[in-house]
Structures are given as C-alpha cells and as structure tokens.
Length: 209
Length: 209
Image 1 (cartoon, rainbow over the protein chains, first blue to last red):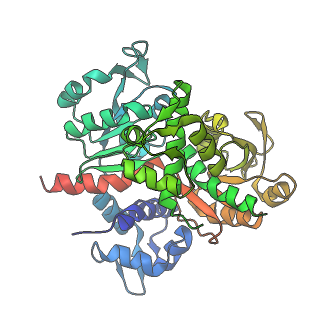
Image 2: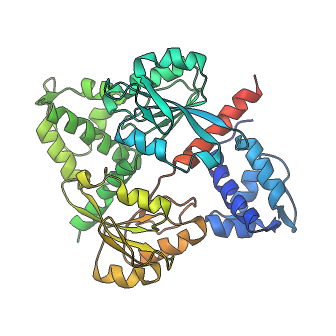
Image 3: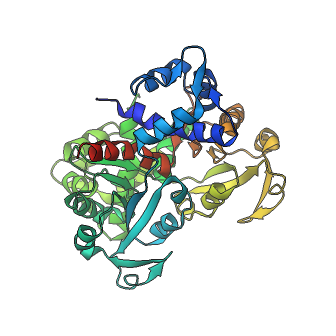
C-alpha cells in the first residue's frame, strides 16, 4: 500500500473534525459537511477514505464513531506514543510545557540538554539528562519520536544519534534541512521561518505599489 | 521573476545561518561550509543565490555581511512587520507570549477573540478586541500578517475576513486547509498534526514487526 504523504497528512484533520462532531453528539456526517468544515472537496475526502476501505454507504453519510475509530486505528491515534525532547532551552521548555500533546497521546518521557547548568535539573517532572548520554539512555528507555529543539549547528548530530537509536519519526524545530534515511519521517515546525517565507511575497507586492 | 516556493523557503534558513556566522565575527563563508551547516548541497545553495544576482566571487567565498544584508533585503527581514492575532485562547496566549517573533521583526499589534469573558481584557499589553469588529479595527490599524489561532469551525470565516481586509499573508494554526485567493500566502503550524502525520508510518512499521 503506497499512499501519498499528502493523503496521510489530511487524515489527522479528518480525525480532528470527527472528534469534534462526536463530542457534539453527532452520529452521521456527509462528505459534503466534512468538506465544508475542512475546506477540502467532498470528492477529495471520499477518494482519501477509499484508500482505507469502505467507511460509509452511498447517500447515507458516514457513521461518525465508526469512521473516527477507523481513522484512529489507521493513524495510531489510540495509542500512547513516547517522545524524547532534545534541547531544554527556551524553546524546549515551551515544548515541554505545551498542553496539546498529552490529550492526543503524545508524552515526553525523556529530555536532554548539553548545558552543564541545565543537566540534572528538573522540568515538568523530568530530570534533564546529558545529550552526550542520549544513545545510552534511549537504548534502555525506548521512545517512538524525537523532538529536536537545539540550535542549527548541533541539530544534524542529534538527528544522527536519534536515527542510530532506531527512531523513525522526528519533529524538527531546528532551522536546518535534516538529512535522514528514507525510512525515517521528519516534519519541521518553525513559525518564524514560516513567516519569513511569506514576507518575501509581501515585500515583492509592496515594492510594486 | 518566478521563483519556486521551495527556493524562497530556504532563504530564511540561509539568513539565519549567516546571522550566526556574523555574530561569531566571521567575514567570509564558502558555499561548502553553509551547505554543511544546513544540510543542503553546495550546488543547491549556489543555484538558489544565483536567482538573486551575484553574491560571491568564484573560489573566494561569500562576504557574510553583504550576503546577509542582501538576503534580509530580499526577504524583507530588515523591516518591522505588523501582525494581528485572532484567537486568544490557550494557544493564542502562548503565541502572544512567544519571544521568538520580536527579535525577527514580527510584532503582534492587535489581538481578537469572540469570547465575551476575554474581550476587553489585557494580555501582554494588548487589549483583546471582539473578533466581530476585526474588519473595522484592521481598516484603521493596518497589519501585514494574520495569525489564526481559532478552532477549526470558525477558522475559514476568520481567514475570509482577513482576506477582505487586504491581508496577504496568513499563519494558520487552525486544523483546516485554508482556502484563499492565489495572491494570499498561507503557512500552517501545528505540531500535533505533524506528529499524527508521522504516527501513521510508525504504526505501519510496528504492524509489520
């Protein structure tokens, strides 16, 4: 089964919309209504779901609970995932304090830093460990995902360590284009880079005024 | 000049690496060294820069200060950009408190919410205004970028309002695929969606074990 990343990246959006409908007590939803909520075409939604089997009956809409359960199963959202955070500076501390991960099954179970002043201190119930011990620690205490929140110059070295630990999913907050084997997934999160990618266009438009 | 978004999205990475070199007192850098720091090939870097004119002399490397100034000019990073935040819930408050925007020239000058309990309260020196007044407020107090931090169901309505206000850049934290005219840039930021897009692959790999 080879499905485009674009399809996979839309599935969590569908799951989130369905969870909202479920908590409103809704039992059935049409692809048209989902389409309207998420700004994806109804045809796109039906096509995306078709990769994963039959979810609804023609003309009768989707069963919200069933579809949500199935999406959660497909995406692994009904599991607890264990995360390691590397980098406990200002950004890392904000990530550690972010309350959006826990309810979705993402739990940071290890945190690392290379600053001697930070190593050994406690943060949100975790003792910050030395980044130099990363591979030893993660060999004993397996995690599923690495969150990289270190400066650019050390980021690839950290990513290489995570890959050597067998980690196959990396959320990268560092401003580098991470190099990883094909079997490893990387997603980048950086609001400032996102803004700076847009100001180019704003500037170009202003220059023409 | 029609340049791929992929090129534009790499320019802020180059600027950030050069700013780090400059603060280290470095005067010259080779494309090879930049390539190593950022995990982009040296050939790619030279090609990306070539879109914007000559930045270096063959074999002598780039002048860090000059290249950085030029990238800042191209990207509009030497300006102050005015941002409006829509949604002052938990996520919006975290965005308002994020210290990474200011030093890069991004200043949130207006904040909106639709919750009567929140409207009129003060946050980081800003008075939260009613989202219903968005278009009136932004007609008088122009901003360059809108940050959307409202729940999915209201997000497209907010985005439509921002577009009607003439805003051409939107940073979208809401879990929807925003629909905007071609002249409007949108970037999405959502670490949980990014994680959920990866757990699909983790789960598939685990299932095969």
